Length: 83
Image (cartoon, rainbow, N blue to C red; front, side, top):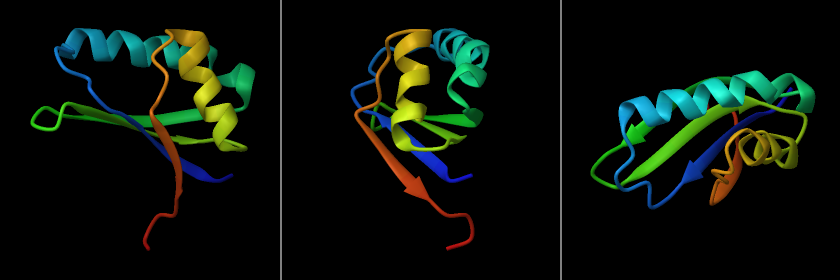
């Protein structure tokens, strides 16, 4: 299954706890969309959050965030490990 990285820009003021809670909500609904989230990162300086998942397509990856907590990604891109 393809890998996708989504980018949430302007994540100013997000807390570690808030990000952990959003990720838990993603995990709770991901199977419904055929998605498997692996990890997430926060770049405090640039105020961006990055999430890595396996998904059948980028629309499915985006749908998880939308349903789980409404924190839609600004961008979803397909990535390949090792390139």
